[in-house]
Length: 155
Image 1: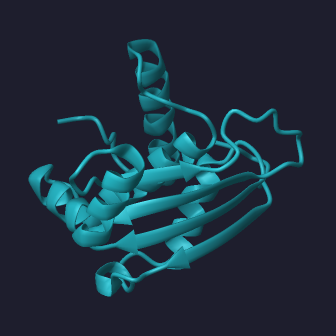
Image 2: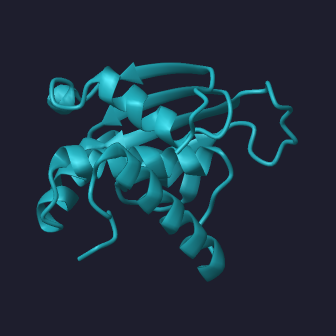
């Protein structure tokens, strides 16, 4: 989407190592860069269902593991052009792998979509209301197309 590459400080953590060989830091960097609208300091962490559930329960009050959680630390702040978006993006390996199988997608395709989705959340995009959801989903489709992946919302 963006011709200009934005400054990115990306940390990748694999406490759940199951996808470490399949979803590499280089792939994650490419996916994140495609979704960036400005500079960012991000971490992406792959966790198992237990940690995913604990985080979702503690921070969202929902007692189940979800596919992606985004913790945006400067959300709602008026960032200057050079101020980085700061966020942690948590991917639950168990949910990601199960959903990919259920949806007939490769783990790579689904992981790419969840990373793009999480990065957009980190930058203030949301899907709480229909109009916001449509805008965010279209942006995700456009980014995934640029990355060479199919429409994540097609059945």
